[in-house]
Length: 198
Image (cartoon, rainbow, N blue to C red; front, side, top):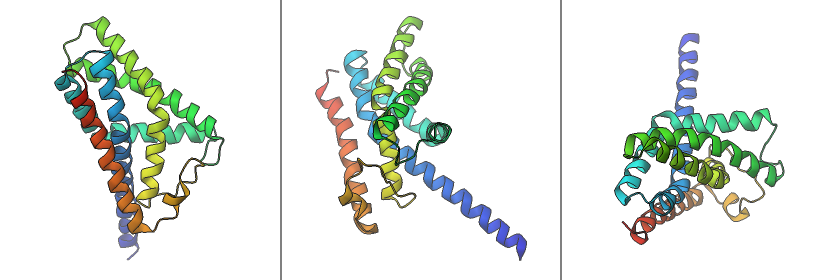
């Protein structure tokens, strides 16, 4: 009996972490992909296919565990610096910016070396550019993680920039909002590839 309860508790914990990982990965990937696609196709002059392939790899790695590392590292950084949803919004944004810049520079060097045929110097420049974009969109990615956690019922978002209308929706309304937001973000990425030169 006691053994069954322990197994059930462990099972619930694993399931909860898996759901949180899937939610974090989806929110983060959808929120930052349009910005990286825009940088890759305009600033770094990658073809749509190279950029799209890189985004697919990035998302795949995210679901394979990279986003777990990203959001776990973000949570750890926030804990270390005593940052929570009620901390000054500027401090929250600055922390997300710095964390995202470092993480994305390292990640994108590995991604670009696998998905493009750039020289070492070009890879370094592309990775540093991606780190800069990561810094710029880090607060967006961090906000997306908090937003998606709230809309899926994992953890309420109490950030000041979080619209009260979303916060007050019932579960069904939050699921609908999640669907609309996700579709809009996916459409934004598609629009980047349509509007940028191939």
